[in-house]
Length: 225
Image 1 (cartoon, rainbow, N blue to C red):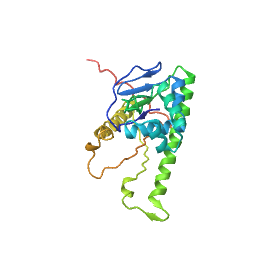
Image 2: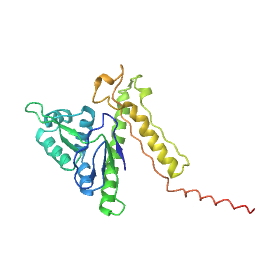
Image 3: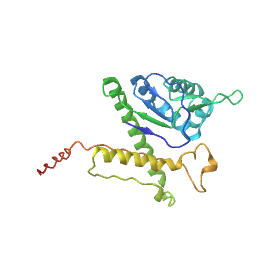
Image 4: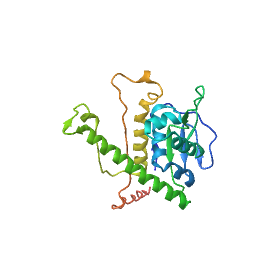
């Protein structure tokens, strides 16, 4: 499972715990730290910090409708797991920021606990995104009143196609490259064009296990001189 955000500028690297590789992209495979993310409040906190750049526990609590004490606890848990870090103090305020804008949660194929933890997080993430999208659809058609401006901005696309592993990897990299054009707009509002609004994108790709892969082509016979 890969979770990637391109909402803001890349954060600088920091010393990270075992099972966490930091820098512009954060790779996590340690099961304990994967499970630290698999909590609805922590996922909300991480998304909020992605959206605003940095925030205190009080600001997080106001946005999420949680208590300051509860947000403080979950922020410390995220920091211990290597997902966030303290930002520059603002007087007496102590804000938090994400360690990296790209997060790649990848199972260790040799560690059953890592594989289970990533599976559990993947299930939570997919359900969360589905619920968010359904809520948006209901908002578009609220009490029978359709907001026409939201219709062209709302899309659900499904597709099935045959591709090699190499072609699939190129497709994924291409999608990431397309998102790069929007980097920096969260951290710097001056970079947002007029009329820009916060958009949410969720992508998923997987092999269809009901179909066997195409057999490898046999090498061409060598012609004798």
